[in-house]
Length: 321
Image (cartoon, rainbow, N blue to C red; front, top):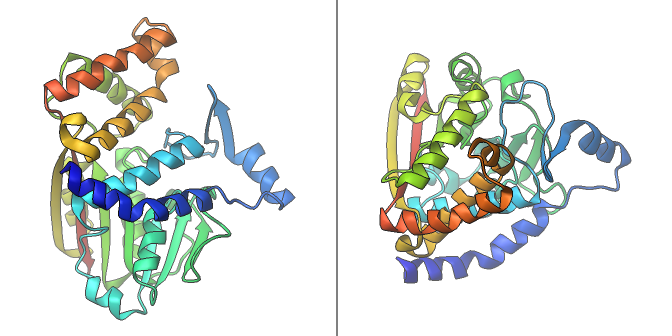
């Protein structure tokens, strides 16, 4: 796997660097935009930047450090799944004239790559604040500010493909069925597809240090009224909507740690970044200084190799009736 991933990584390195530069290209020459972003939409805690918007349960940062993590996470997922999506739409996308929506697009790495792969299609990204590239982007890409829980700013039956991923930490469980899924369905055309991709909020084959970190993370997630078991429930949620057919589910297990080669190392780095943003809270909970908490990860790195730890990601896709 290491050799294969090295070739894969080399083939995407220039694209990643381009997206990394463009993801930070918010137009700060616009004084009204600058004032809005930095006085209202963001807040700063322990040196990290976070959303500062009412009705937002998502508690991960949204600064440049997090953008880097999300971009690398995208390429890691693409390698694990060997594709950017699972819905049976490739022929239609290659033919063109398809409208695609990425909800909660963040730095828009997935969207920009899809727009490059399928240049005849129209791509729209929506997020609550503009951390996506606003200036350097393909002509077939548009970005819109919006909050899924407040209703997407699009008409009914508008998109052929509506996509969302890794937002299980953004909504309380009940809002998936009352707001999120109905809204994704509303903006999708009959015959179009809704696709949802999610992590399992746990690491399989845990050692004691991993278990301690994951238990703390899950407690933190639940303290934000977020359900850490969404992948277990998603198929039922989609069926219960009554507006979808051909409901599919697939998952992939992948290594976390150096035992998994380059992709395992990326997964390890991704997990450490997630744990470290919780440092201020977890170090107190564990009765540790910041230095002791950081040293914790030297043991964590060895433990995931010893236990051959794994992560699991899920995809759900369904056709609108």
